[in-house]
Length: 439
Image (cartoon, rainbow, N blue to C red; front, side, top):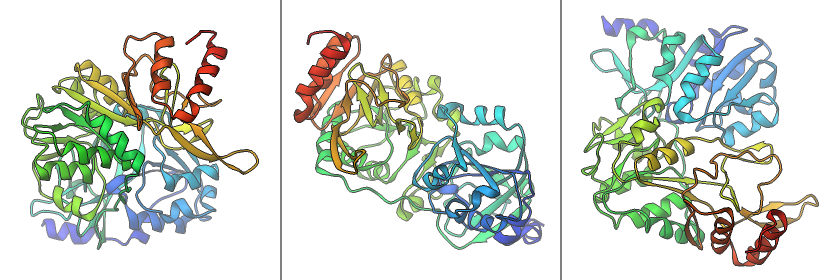
């Protein structure tokens, strides 16, 4: 019976794309459940359909629908989090950003889009009971399914079977695409010398027995290398990566001291290597929960000795953190920075903002210049992701400072002390000029 239903619902990616009509709203998820074949097939609709609303986020592959320079004539895209694959559509003015906190992402989208015509997600092969599971992600799809008219699943032959808010039954499915692949992967960044120094400073703030939230990138990989020396750590995080897997494998993470979900790693989504996807496959100790749960402040606050670790692009001398863009240019999104940072402090834990002391960019004349990432004020037009009232610890490769309870003047002193030495005198002069205070 189930096998017959499966065969009856089989279709090609091209046929699935053809079911999309002008004026439809389509949910095209990202991360490990990026529907690669369907996303590539969508480009065949360019010029043949119009006014298709494409809801998306964080794709892990350069899908044709994102790279096609003419996609804007058919698709209007929107996303609550950008990455490099969405920069192209954003630059062509066919993708717009939705400001949000991740814990509220599904709620906010339902408010703006009360009805979705089609959702397409990557799933694991069906089991004997007719159940698929989303391949390493529970971000918001379960929250949106009640508002969705049709669901098509793209079955990845090597898709991991997962536990948590990931189940989809064949009776809920209107079409099945078979795809011989792993979920889309996320390459790791090689830590730089600055990453290693920064990771070392952050690791000093993480006590044995802490429950940690950590994401991706060179700094996080360097930090994870230092955390291997810790004991009894737990993980409650929005994102689960290769470096988190390594902490479990080496025994630094046991989840034994967690207050909530003892013995279990809790995450909302997994992104990384094929090895990582194999690790979470049929692994009941990795629980994928919707962001509305993992990033709920009251849930995070139940975790013992919670430590939140997030990155910023700039921090001004009062402690305001800009983490998602420069000026009016959107690079990523606020993500869970506010969720996890505030939640950790509600738990009596620590919120740590990390950033490199300098960055390079082109000036108006096209010359490459180096600038301080600790600044007197944020660049014009730059949005504040994490307010100065929330900022707890800030770390660069030059050290770590705690801003809690400090005056504006003392915050400036502390932040200048971890700025790059080449910019410290300039930062002091600018602070005294702009804020009319002597340091």
